[in-house]
Amino acid sequence: MGCSVCAKSFTAFRWTHTCRYCSKLVCSACSAKASIVQGVKLRKPRRVCLTCFMDAKFHQPPDTRLPHSSTSSDFGSPKPLDPVFHTYHRAKPPPTLADLSVFAPRYQTDATYFLLLEQALAVIGSSMGLIQLIGTRDVFYVTAYNVDDLPPQMTRVEAGLVTLTADPTLVQEPYHDDMPFIRIPLMLATSCIGTLEVANPSGYMPPADVIKDLQNIASTAAMVMQNTAIESQHHHPNKRTSASRLRQHRGNSASTTSTSSMYSASSFRDTADSTTSSNVSESAECMMEALLTMSMQTATLLRDTKERMHCVV
Image 1 (cartoon, one colour):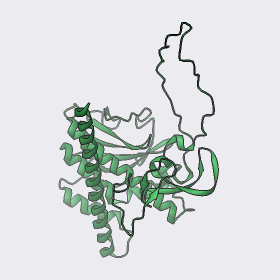
Image 2: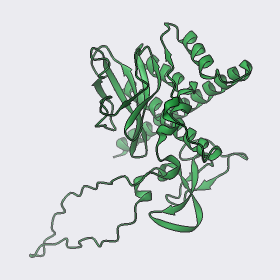
Image 3: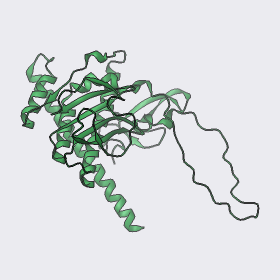
Image 4: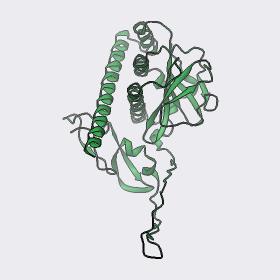
């Protein structure tokens, strides 16, 4: 039995915690202490998992209205129930993750996202792609490969990100009208925090297994973004980074190996010791591979479970 969020096994160094909202077992890295649950302030903070913490219903007051209990007609026969569609409006984001765009400089100097992008390009056989972070009004580019002349920051209208869906779509970017892109949303709970976009010259949606692999990579990128934001808030609670310090890293080399090395060197150029820079890059690569493997294994397990349930039915 492991963590319900990251699926890692519990050890002496990875303790078991229980989410006070959904009662699932989680580890310390995938949980946080909350003092306000559904608008009610608690006497002492309770630990909840990150999935519940990012859910809109967790921060909304409970609905105290009584439902209409009439289920029969005047003639005594059962009255057919009309389909009910629930729409949950996202409440004010939690203060620890109010706007992930403040962490854009931290994301843009992390080689993990570039390695994830390389994995996505290898899955679909493309040579052009990018990962972008969607803020409240603006769009920030985390990393890009072979995409030239990208502005460091655009509004959501300029980037064509006014309407977003939770499903992969085929889009025409305003800065590359002649090249269609496959857009995979980076989802956290019920909100989209960014997109993974890879070029697809054929103009058609790839097979379902390729889409599934791209979604796994996008899920890993979203998880890393969330963990980075929480870790940065934990170590630097009063530190805020200005958007004017955004840096852009692009790879335009035909060799992914040389491009990755160039990206790693430029990403950690502020580090005095080059050996430390290399170690950080290697650890980031190992973390990316472990997270990617975990997300793929989880997706395969869920898919097999659904198939078995379908066979039983």
